[in-house]
Image 1: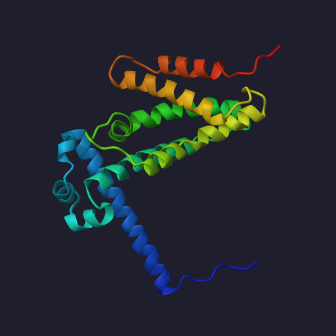
Image 2 (image 1 turned 90 degrees about the vertical axis):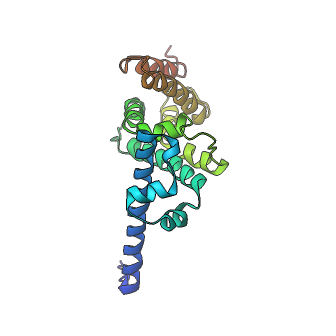
Length: 208
């Protein structure tokens, strides 16, 4: 078994530079989404973000290009955070139990990130339209649902069909309930649980 070659001074420097870049990028996105929540979309100017983050506008333009690039970066960051939230759910040996555990986790992720949620699903930045590439990457962030549903189909819990068909139906049901909850029309998770459970029941294999 061979060990990896030492990084050397240049490799270590590049790694450190990349870590510093990622940390700054994450901080700028956090500043931007917090401004979106507190002061609305009109606050998302390069000058305001730079002032809040303690950097120059040149840094922001270099990282994101323009305001549209910043909005798309925020959109993708939101889905990436959701992906990490769902993938942190402990796996189960039983795929149906694992799928059942992902439902509440998705709701928690939505409620824990109100700024990102509003940008991802509620058009919080007027005029912003994600590119087709961004939409593809956003949906890919939820591929964990497709994989677990595929396992449920293989194990005989769900009817044989395209896993994404079930995942999208479940996603639609979840989003409807969460949107109503965020708007103050629902007081707790009971409706969310009811509609997501009902959606899954539509695809359960009938036991004779």
